[in-house]
Image (cartoon, rainbow, N blue to C red; front, side, top):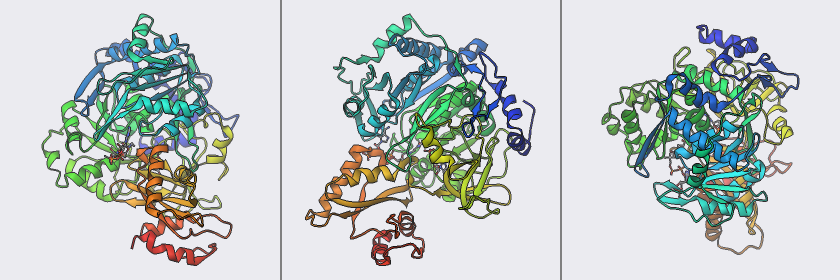
Length: 630
Ligand code: COA
Ligand code: AMP
């Protein structure tokens, strides 16, 4: 690739996307090189590299082995919660992946079939993902912190032939038996997978009593006899579906293709994150989230780097020095995590004493994303680590950063509070309610002018119309990000928060609508609202407000406990839903819409005027002290 400045690269990616992304296609190995770069004939469904064919697993593993990288370390597994660690060279990881891919094939999994992966942070999760990619199957990883009912919804939507899981996950406070949760999910689901493969962990083995159950090790023994080669897939074929929270209880199945994604990963890893083949890179996230897909698995491996898979927490496993231990032990060049993890460390070690106990000389950059990076956290991390702390803004939908400081392409000034500038490929525009661009500095809806670059969502699984309705119908020709904010005179983007009912709890994206659905099913509840309230540690926490049906005599404390238990059981512990208040009424517009945004702003301590559309201002006035927790 020719050497370009950020401005040139961004300009070219927007004015001549086909030229720009045509050139970047060379970062990937193709079975059949694409001759057409972008197909907009079915706009707004744009397709990248429509006539190209490739295999994503080949790009992540085989090509490095073939080109002399067989002995290079591909993956370092470090698990303070089990006291184990292991490294895999590229050749070893390839052997594991080819064997598991063979096992899947023997179970009848073919190109296009779905495989749900419900696993903790163990190497087998990465092996399962890459094995699917190898045979053209579509993986759908579900985060372990979700409850059976949420898993069931995803199983019914993805209709997998096989589910891959593990006997347990290990949280610092407890060991979580995954298999009973999976069995419960399968009891709730209408769809029945043919096979359930379970990795038995010594900490808590599972009972594999069902006929469909198969031990991971048994599957692998069969797979090793007949490992699978790479299946040629179209660039536009789906690589994975990853569910994310929308505004309703029904999650959205984000569809990622193979070709555009591989190119986006191969381009972004060196240009955005400044890392490349041979570098040790660590994304301290979870494979259940998009950061895990893109930068624990695909980005670093497609680039030939070493990726760290960490089964632990920033604090408590065993202390707030855990991240610094891993960095020093493996010589990590760049660390990527969520601001909440740094806030958790800062809370336990405000002076950064543990930072000083480790040799962090290899660390060049700390990347943070997943939620707004508050200037205090930025300042603390910058001071204690003495390296650039780089915010990057993106979403499950986009698959890679929309705005960042491009550490590999052209590092630039960092402005605290801003994830810096639009990444090449993303045409960021801030629009007002009527779809007009606002002047620099003015707030509005952050949108992306179509076409989106390679690697972004192609649609929602099985629901093209919902894709259009959710993202493309608000403003013609634009993707609606759901985030509000502004762009300053220098082109720096500022993301101020969601404009919809999605909240962000400890870097985990959750839907308040889904929580409301669970709460409304309680027989004593007449109506309810759940809002995300600012929290100094987790960024936001959900808070519920319920109005009881008239005549209900129940003790409000009891109802509160029941509601907390229900949300935990039906959505999962990760929702961190612990606060519910029983109130006399909820403020509404004259058309009956609950004024959630107004409630949220009051709860966050803002001075909010009574909206002109309100039906009964007294209800809001009565609620104000409750919202402010006076
Ligand atoms: N499987 C099962 N349960 C899980 C889980 C998993 N994979 N992950 C979290 N949970 C549970 C936790 O045990 C906890 O349960 P509890 O209510 O019984 O204590 C609950 O879900 C909430 O977990 P968490 O959000 O992790 O909160 P915490 O208070 O335990 O830890 C942090 C706080 C900040 C340390 C933690 O949230 C963290 O590391 N966040 C980083 C998030 C991240 O990497 N996001 C990815 C975007 S880059
Ligand atoms: P997810 O899809 O889980 O990655 O969550 C995406 C949402 O998280 C975005 O729409 C934002 O609301 C928020 N988010 C992610 N990264 C950032 C960031 N760097 N700054 C502000 N908000 C962010």
